[in-house]
Length: 488
Image (cartoon, rainbow, N blue to C red; front, side, top):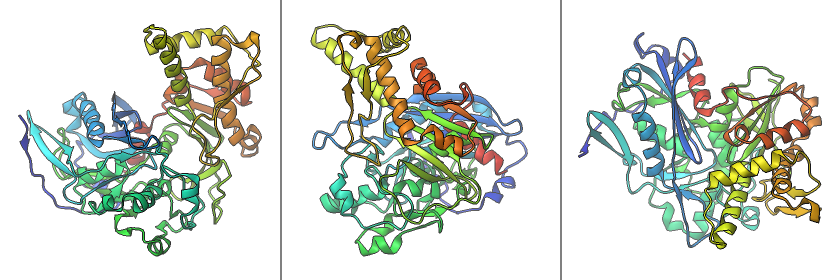
């Protein structure tokens, strides 16, 4: 049985310098966590050596089927936190007692809403204190949400930002609810990404705190001034009271309001960062590095010079965006909506076809056979345009198959063409010539989809004329722990 636990609700917003003095010298670890689209991962980083000693990951299985709107993409925050609990339960208890600070990152753009001071309930079981979301916390509307059509987005006020607003962005989602379900918004006082919610609950914050990395991913945020477009939003009737308080990336949001899995109360909790920026931080050690990360979606990025300033207004048709990074710097990013999810859809399609013939084949076996067939087919004249999910700079684009002939209809040809299409789409968004002009000398390949798929790796090496390095510790959970370890 669980028993209700009431933590100390003293709240404070502190600067990063507090981290170095608030813990005893016996606190030797940084806890990093990544609340991703499909899984949660936590790591323990030994502070002195900057080395990961323990790592755990569990799938969230949190997707919610929406029968009323097929464009909706939502997840259950309770299941995300449950996956986090599984991770925390599996970490060494003796090391958790020595955690000196907590870093949190997660999937960007999405939004979850809650009521301040009542977003969770603290429980104690078997001497372990944890929290669960309350029923009055909304579902997480994710970055994959497609409810905001091109016509709807064009009706919104023009932002004072160098970044365009797209469907799945927090502010766009709120505008959609204002038009279609205004009563829904009246139930809440706070909003943030899922990682911001996590920080708010751990720290017992009276108001949600958000870094510029996540704020920029919501839209209507000026990264130069580090402020929301408050007046523009007010004039449009936007409920600006839902907007989080913005702090610097790398700052601390507050202290844990109680002991949590053995981590002492009053342990500093960093304001949540974006999972993408943290994955880059974990591996980009040289200004000549570019990072290609491919998991559910895909991103190709490199660091801009320190003196770079983004343009004053967005170019909705430009495939390259400039994301705020750390210490006022920016990353040039080609962020594609089409990555590992395209291969996953291909596998599900084949599985569905076989079931119609009464055949049951495990999806992992299908995936394995696709790889084997494509390895035996090193080239193909079959062309697959793999923009199955559209792109933010071109939402109307779709996938297509062309150059079909009787000789290229094998599984190997099709798999090779699908993988090639994924990589060539990225190369269209950020051509190799632009990487060369920026001084890129090496590509660091990362992400589960890329690391597990040798065909994608072959296509990367075919399309981009740079050495490609695999196997580096490219990991958002590691990156966020490194960020906050470097602050101390």
